[in-house]
Image (cartoon, rainbow, N blue to C red; front, top):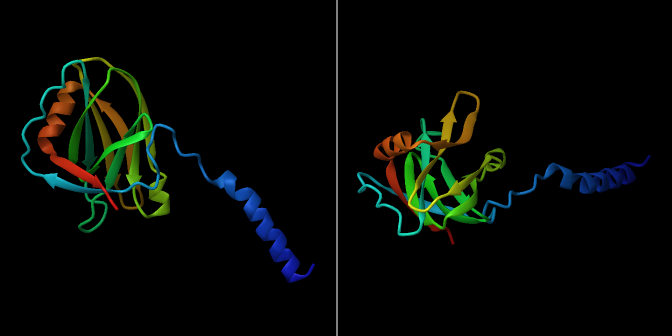
Length: 173
């Protein structure tokens, strides 16, 4: 077989196989292309209670150590198909939400292909007046970085908030 024909056939094969390599983006996440700029406020005031008739979610990032020299992970949090915000380093933000069943997504915001695939999902039923704590944990080790999502109990959540900075964020242009 001539090299040109072999290259053409192999290229056609890759075009057909490529969609099998791409994992579908979870529907509970926001648009995969959205990126956030995050700033952190040291010694923030305690979160206010949820608004009347609403539930509250406190989204925490617990970075056990920086992911690189002077580098912190930015983690996006999505709810029911839209991003609600992002944390950077050990930080948190608060969102009041409607009661009911919600689909939560966390995604590591990165330009590195393998890290962009770090997505964790959770399902919870929010009751009015209740506060829910979700922690995205980033744990770098010598050879890899572990990324996971946990729902914390009230005592754990309140304690983690005291250790974290308050995140404020905006979508990057």
